[in-house]
Amino acid sequence: MVTVTSTAHQRDRCERWFVNRGLPHLIDQYSATEDVLTRTAPFLMVVVFAEFFLTFGDRWSGWSQALAFSAGIGVMLGGLALVNRLRGRRLVQLPDEIGIPEVVLYFALPLIPTAVGAEGTVLDNIVIVLVVNAVVLVLAYAITSWGLFPMFGWSVGQIRAQIGEVATLAMKSLPILLIFSAFIFLNAEMWQVANDFSLPFFGAVAVLIATIGGTFVSVSVRRTTVDLARFSNWSAVRSRCVDTPVEGLVPADADPPPDAPPLGRQAEWNVGLLLFVTQAIQIALVALVITAFYLVFGLLTVRETTLLQWTTTAELTRSGDWAIYWSVLGGEVVFTRQLLLVSAFIGMMSGLQFAVQVVTDESYRAEFAEGMTSEVREALAVRAVYLRTLV
Image (tube, rainbow, N blue to C red; front, side, top):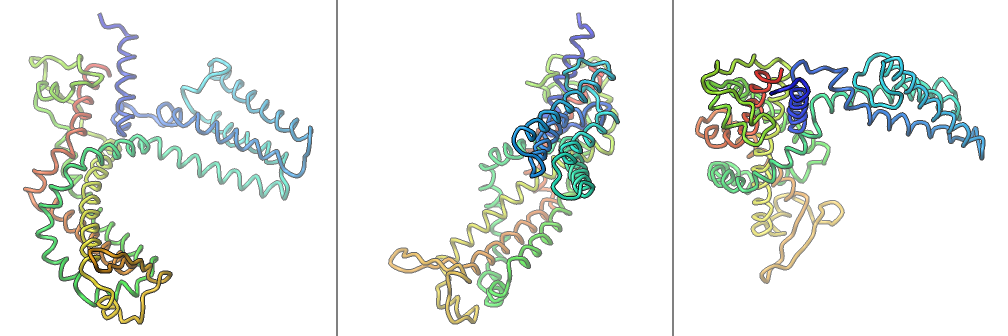
């Protein structure tokens, strides 16, 4: 017999499963005060504790300094205990809900060591601490709300899983990409541009190309997200829920079909962000493979004399051109800043072309989308069971 306690436990396991996969917005009635800020509370307490070391300024010394620090810690613990008591919690307990009292305490407590240990104008120091704490709070909220750290860990796992697919992606893309990239690489004007490129300007070009590619990927992701959340029957859901917290809770095939409500705006953005990261990894890996290919190709084909003619420079220097020479196969190869920039530029343009192909070519989407969306489809299947049986 399923009890309320066991249901609550299973629901908690399922919601933590969503969080660990970078999809916290799949949680029903996802709350800022109960789900987001409560997970940031330990980190914010560490921030407040660290700020109490501001008492160790030049204003105090010796035992008086230690006494001021200890008094500040006592005030902090007393404030936490008082808020817990007002909330009906144990005196020493992490909050299960963050409201105005906890936020006021977060901003007010660091003002004590700031005022006590301030070396300059107290008001100026207080304003600085308040601004810093506000920025920390906003960043912590954003990172926790969208599960960016679990999403980053998931992305690293995707990189490992997709290493084997990079060769397939590159081999399928390389013939088409070489048609235009080889002419660019063996073009004197391209090397002259690279020679005149400063790193800040090259960085700006990289950001521009990445923005255009990201726009294409976003379009592709938006098309995919809505379809992934639809299931025609529980049999399709059951096959996706193996080794998940709801594996034994999937309704029978004879039960009414899955009727999970459409994804809300923030949940859709959360799923879209995860899909965006996955597809961006594929594109980045293709770009890196093309960049590495042209680095090796350039080392073997572009001699120093040719490079000097193309760039119209008198000589290559280690400081300005990053020139490094090696003896290979009885000859000499040279690595330069120009070679790196040309190869990176062609790699980025190749990645952009691949992004366009993934969006516009049905065969590309059919071949590469399944691996990209399988885990997201699994999470949405778990959501369907979670909403039917646990909520």
